[in-house]
Image 1 (cartoon, helix red, strand yellow):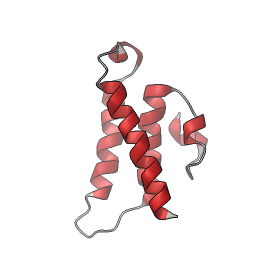
Image 2 (cartoon, one colour):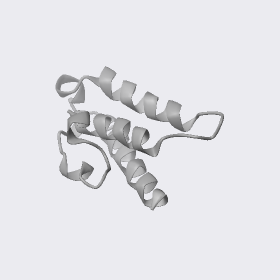
Image 3 (cartoon, rainbow, N blue to C red):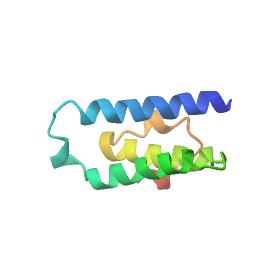
Image 4 (cartoon, rainbow, N blue to C red):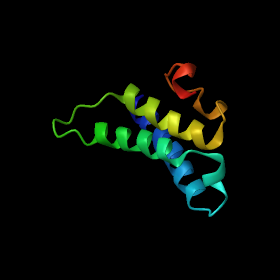
Length: 87
């Protein structure tokens, strides 16, 4: 089950990366500072030298970044996060 959750988080991160690299007018619609903040917090958690991380926390941060870019909660519905965390 954990692998499935990580796979979904990875797909969300790839979608964010693809959208940011399309060259669209993303900067006008989205505060990129918040997107980068959420993504860096997720990476920081995953890079913990002790090898322990909270998958719930990582999901929450990736979901918040994804929501900031796409404003679409449907893709986040399978994650175990509170919907208020992504707004």
